[in-house]
Image (tube, rainbow, N blue to C red; front, side, top):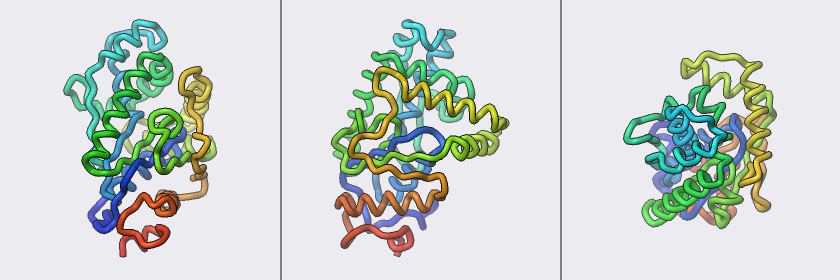
Length: 253
């Protein structure tokens, strides 16, 4: 992301919630969007991953009741600058470690504990309130933002894509990050994560009733970003825009 991606004349006022399973492009879209419209950015998934890392470091079974106690006490801090988001555990930068296979395999089980979700949802809402009082706008990504964390968000987007495309994207990310790659195994992991996240009793992954579904299977990031900007413009969440928001090129004019 460089200065050409930032529009000094357009700013977000309010909350945009972007939900969906992994591999749909929601992290890149959310960060790019937030940077472009002068908003804060909150990656709620990183918060769940950080407390999961605390559980694994404690040597606990992610499904055990004791895991919930460790997770709810884990001292995490998350930065909301979209150009340089941060996540720390007990003051340690864990942005890379939380994306590893061990955390990915355990995060659904840890996030299913009611005390963990209650603690992190409350934390997320505080961060959103602080962002609205400061930057004036915030783009929040996760799996239950529009339905649970920020049900009053001015725009709710639910990103989807085929399992095969999402697995391929995740495999490419792993290879690029030096974590190896196994497309078949990644597809299985994606399917398992979807099943666990959508099947849990508490705050299952689902689209809010008033969310706009955007299928990114055949779209690149710029296409998805254009669509979200258009939706935000239609809902009058962007200042400095006359009429509806148009394409990325128009926003950079």
